Amino acid sequence: MRNRGVEFAVGLFVLAGLLCTAWLAVRLGKMEAVGGEGYPVQARFLDVTGLKAGSAVEMAGVRVGRVESIGLSPEKRAVVTMRIDKGVTLTDDAIVSVRSSGLIGDKFLKITPGGGDPVKPGALLTETESSVDIQELMGKYVFGGVKEEKK
Amino acid sequence: MVTDPEAPPANPVTRLGAASLDAVASLGSYAVFTARGLWHMVSLPWQWSKVVRQVYFVGVKSVLVIALIGLFTGMVLGLQGYYTLVKFGAEGLLGAAVSLSVIRELGPVLTAIMVAGRAGSSMAAELGIMRISEQIDALDAMDVDPVRYLAGPRFAAALVSFPLLTAMFDVIAMIGGHLTGVTLLGVGPGVYWGRIHDSVVLEDVTGGFVKALVFALLVASVSCWQGFYAHRRPGGFGARGVGLATTSAVVASCVAILAGDYVLTSFLM
Image 1: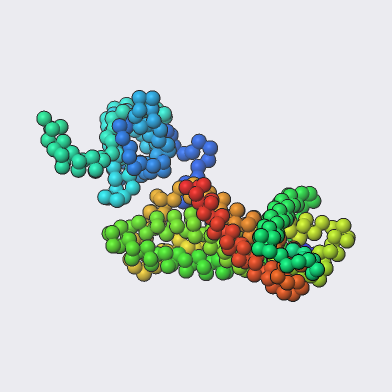
Image 2 (image 1 turned 30 degrees about the vertical axis):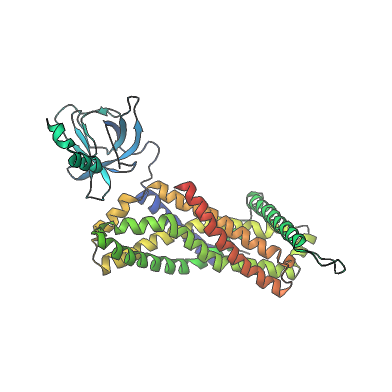
């Protein structure tokens, strides 16, 4: 015996549940199809403390991509792979800086555009500014390291 | 535990041994029952119409209570989160606080506990009554595998319904957080949803669904097993056994959910 009413209700329930799942996974979880949208660009830093995979990449305050992965190069530098949105072109002299939104805010990458040649997907940007270690800065201030460095 | 009325009274060490053997036997019976239920969930021929009926019972009938619990959980998180974050001048983080706590933790756990109370108890009672009224024995006599006929569709229905209900809970709870945080307390809607969008990553969402699937298996297997063997309960038999099985199904499911949650969270972190 088939009960059309029950089947309709179950169909509706599954549809609503799948819609919620899709919204969570695609819209919030930023699930990407194989390869993902946009193109990868790498940048080498001395220090990326606080930066995480998924952090925002911004240019002039506009989100233009996200951090895909963070790894260590053979010469012990942090190499960050960013995925930059399609339609946004970076130049080889663009400056990539690790910035923080507020005192306790998340770290993000800020790109200051340059005027050089456009980069190809997978290129390595070397003009970078690392994150500021506030404790190290305070230590230098307290123990006079700041002045010594100025000399 | 079967005791011989003419045997001498047992000393504490004997009683401890008997209790340990009982516990191991129960655990073994539960493991075998769960493995058989899982196998019969995917064994041919599939029991589509029975699964649909169980999804209707476990999933569709739980939507209203899940929606209500989700809404109020989100609202209270919005309220608590706002008054905590405003002390640090960080009320802009409200969206992140509500969404991450709901998606990672509260969504799967509260959904599972509510469904264990609503559907798990009823599974145990239904199977328990079928057991004491000898319907399960009748199935056995007709050469119909009762685990396949009764547990398989319930396992499948729980595994389908729990993730969907959890997804609904998550979305409704974030809307609840919006109601208190944005509508009542004045956080900017762009800041609230922007923060949610920035802070939630795919690992959070998949972690929540992994939890929902594990909890589904725990609730369905514990509830069905309690009902299926209601006649073997040491505390009583007949109607009393069914009552005890139903209570145990809910209590054991909730304990299993929370203990499993701790283990899963430590793996997913």
